[in-house]
Image (cartoon, rainbow, N blue to C red; front, side):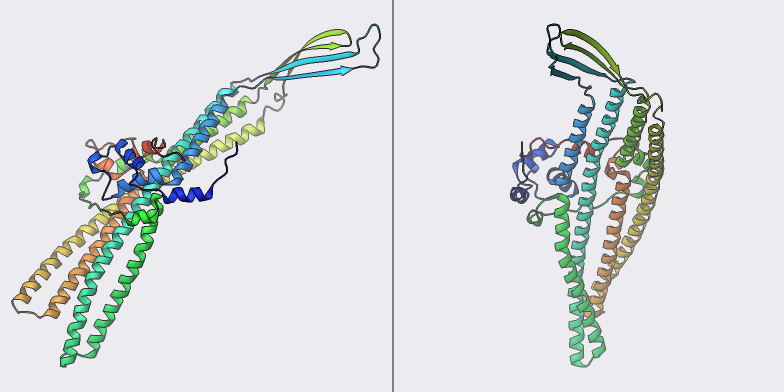
Length: 459
């Protein structure tokens, strides 16, 4: 049955995607969200990840490919079908002894040898498992994009807030210099410098505001929602309160990565596919047989027959195909070893970078605390008349610079966290909250990605 693609209807379905609709609310309920908290008014990274799992079309593609692989697995279990053939003939040499007619009927019954059917089933099963893991890999990529987009948006918001405050302080400083120039108490050089710095901050602030629109679009792309729905959301950003001692050791991280990395598990399935292909090529050394019983009536004579046929593969032993399959298995083994070594290196590197980012952030936060104390002293001196407003403004500006430095390091720290999570392909919270601190081959995101939401409106 023909099923043409309706492009206009597809566009309309995309525009109608709404995290407030009943289907998505039911999806959240089925995944443990309390009913009293729905519909969500504030969104964090986990909430947006559920949006991506429900709305993003790339996961639908991966699920469709998995279903196709499952169909191929069922097809691999089919047995060869027997074939039926017949013929009819008429002779112009008929006489009293010979009938003018001849007809025949035969059946070809194929018989597979050397367990080839079970090997095909094994091969298809591993391909199906690999396709299933590709679904989980797609889901993890969606989470990665959502978290990165949300962190970029958060950092952009922090920069806008800090630059807005800096613009106010720079404006105040420029106004003070303007008054002093008017009174002859300051030079035009000082005023020009203050105005130039004000313009620089204003230009940077405008650039960040324009970039906010781009980051919203990226967030919409990551979740699979229309931009208008993202613009209506209110996001919350969770602060990291973990201490350095809370993070798992390098050895546990390596084990966790090797157990949870989806690409490693896919590589194992690909190796198993190459093993099954080698088995099949070895089995092909033994030819399949075709038994052909038949009956023929030829010009008055009745004839029955029993035929047996098969390819003479026993002559060359299928050596070239076996050698090719053997080399393919070696390639898959080498690729797996390389991927495993790369994964260990990525986990170690990401862990070191996270620790360094955490240390740099802690040091900068201490410096900011010291600067805040200095600013507080300046404010007390200003109230006591010991310093003027210009000196207070510069002190407040130094405090803002400290805040900007902390914001940058916080962003780098979160980026390092995301990098480590992506190296492990499991949220750090799942490891940190494990009281025994033992790696587990459990990933809730993976389980969620395997099946399509049952309550989604059928298209």
